Structures are given as structure tokens and as C-alpha cells.
Image 1 (cartoon, rainbow, N blue to C red):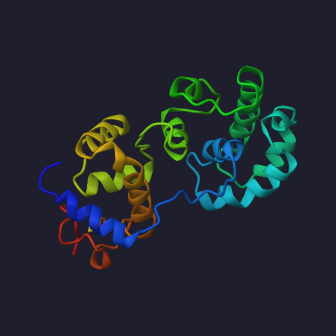
Image 2: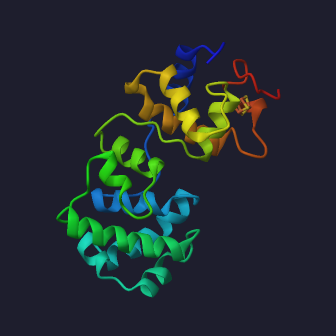
Length: 208
Ligand code: SF4
């Protein structure tokens, strides 16, 4: 990071978004993992629309492991890539039931071994559970980090490293949520609302 005042950025973000939490609705480890898998390349809003029925029909890994693919597809149809995700969440539920006695794995290696779970999904779970500091880079985090000058790379894993090096690990989780909140509400992909953005005086990409 070059010129951005990190302390000021954190202060503004903390004032703008005092409760930086996931916008996915989940009540336990099972619901967390399945919701995060479903949220890949899909909005949290759409995921939250389908998960109440999904979790009512299949309340734990064991029950989901026994589900029929077409029945899960019917429930999660509103979610992007619902066919692939239906297969993945059933396969993941089987793996967790058989290899981890129905309990959420708590290491990055074990999480990334699950079908449909890549680095970002594992990072979200590790971060949300407080298992280890992580900085998941989704499309909002990637875009806003670059616009703010927090990272320069065009590769997600490099952006992750650049931002992690610039901030203490105890801030990664909050910063991840702040960047998502800001990307969804203000620093939008096609039309960033720079004139009303609280960061426009310090942002190197400000259009206002
Ligand atoms: S000033 Fe514009 S580009 Fe910079 S963070 Fe705000 S909305 Fe995004």
C-alpha cells in the first residue's frame, strides 16, 4: 500500500459499518458451511431465500448426505450454478459424515478437501469460526481493495497477500466484511458512488 492512511481508513470503516458481520443467515456449523458453498458467485440474498427450506428439509450433514440430487436442485434452483452446487453440497455432507463424524472440519487442509470448497470458502469458514485469521477475497474485496490502492495485483491470491501484509491479522476479518459492505453499497462494480463515498478524499480511484 502506498499513500493511503490505514488508520484513517479503519476509523472511517468502523464508523460506517459498526457491525461487520456476514450477511448470510446461519445458526450452526452445518448451516455456515453449506451457506458459504452456495454463496460462491451468487448473492447472499438469494442464498438466504433458499436456505430456510433446505435446512428444514435436511437439518444436518447426515440428512443432507442422504438427499436426492433432484430434490435439492428443486429447493436451491434460485442460486447460480444450482446443479453443480446440489451435487457438491450432498458430496460434502457425505464426506463430513463419513470422514469427520458429522462435525465441521477445522483445518484449512480438511476444508479444502471437501467438494465445492476452495481457498475462499475455507477462509470464510475459518474466519467466521475464529479458528485462524483469514482474509477471503471475493469479487467485492478484490475490486474495492484495488480501487483503494490496498493492492495492485490482478490475481486474487496476490491481492490476498498484499492486503494481509498491510494489516495486522486481528483486523483481517473486519476488513474483509467492511470491503464487502462498501462494495455492495457504495463502491459498486459498474457505477461507484464516489461523490457520496466517505472515502473519496483519500481514495486514489475517486471519480469525484
Ligand atoms: S471513492 Fe469511489 S472508487 Fe474510491 S472507494 Fe469510494 S466509491 Fe470506490
